[in-house]
Image 1 (cartoon, rainbow, N blue to C red):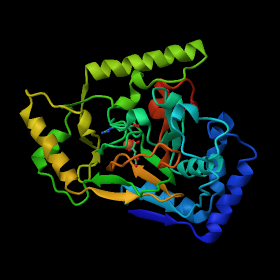
Image 2 (cartoon, rainbow, N blue to C red):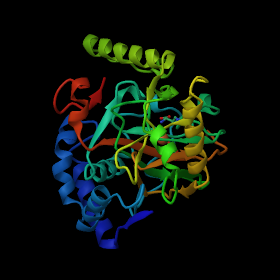
Image 3 (cartoon, helix red, strand yellow):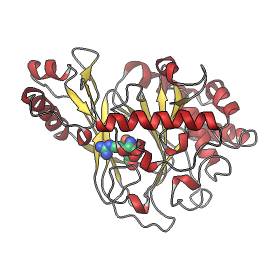
Image 4 (cartoon, rainbow, N blue to C red):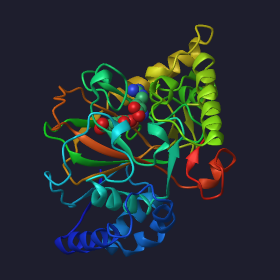
Length: 343
Ligand SMILES: NC(=[NH2+])NCCC[C@H](N)C(=O)O
Ligand SMILES: O=C(O)CCC(=O)C(=O)O
Ligand SMILES: [Fe+2]
């Protein structure tokens, strides 16, 4: 994987920047911070800016880990029980959130889904009791099967950022890719065709809707998004699994939510072949507190190994950002040029 390890002076520099920002902004969701972040990110240490720019431009590996940021485990407080109770202002993780958001801003612009975690930009990923056996980031007992994030969605993220706040049992994030894989040309050809129906994963379904918007218009927009999602759930749209460069194609799949109709055995065999090829090369990485992982969501799949959650405030806790390289791709689904929520 591609690593950027901050030196002691880098860490001190980033820490001072974040401390001064924590006096000006109360949450990374503050529209003023969202607008300023791109500019402020230029004040991060040069080695970090150079590393993330290299990762973005040369695509050296599907994963980039930024190491060195220090977390005061007592300072961030207990791991919450549900994301619905811990978003926005007053988070004890403000410094970590700011650092993470600034790093992300060097790769692109964070985006929010109206249908995920109350439309927040910054998501929390920790085990939730009612989700133990679900294929959700908030699950625990089951292997979170590998996937391209939001693979069903035409405006899915270019990068998934995960910042580790705590990971006491060293639970692995898994990852896979086509690196070193040589799929037969006819299989690749089939995978490049729109023959693979995919359903939205459950994190976007209305069943996981929580606090709702006060604003009538926003609520109606959100209703429409949920309707679109449930329409896709009932009638999955066929997508292409591979796209982009001929030699080293980009990926779009979440096999758990894909089923090829019996009428297309050729597509079924091709999907089976790529799933097996990726399965054969799965690796794992246990994030350490303070580390930030950026996954190139075109180049690599990811998931999470199962673990025993404690539900006592000491559980594994990550934060997550979705980052778009080009906001304009989703302009028709956002309310203004610089709005971040996709409806
Ligand atoms: N194969 C899967 N489990 N896909 C769904 C991934 C989890 C989803 N991204 C979430 O936020 O919870
Ligand atoms: O928990 C992890 O390491 C990965 C979580 C994930 O893939 C997700 O939330 O979509
Ligand atoms: Fe994911």
